[in-house]
Amino acid sequence: MKETVNFFTDRKVLLGIGIGMVLSTILMFGYKHNGTLSNDKVEEKARALGMHYDDECKVIFKGDEKK
Image (cartoon, rainbow, N blue to C red; front, side):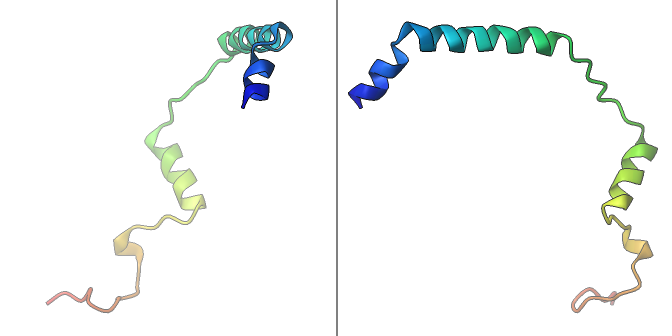
């Protein structure tokens, strides 16, 4: 346990972690995220992954019959 604490109190390790945090923050400011998708695009992607509507399914599951 003391070895782990001594490792993280080393100045070189703390300096490396700090430089990594600063660089990653600078890189993330340059990232442009466009999170807007139209409903049509969402449905296209969902259908590509296997989505279907209940009225499109021709199978009747046990206990799912209409009375």
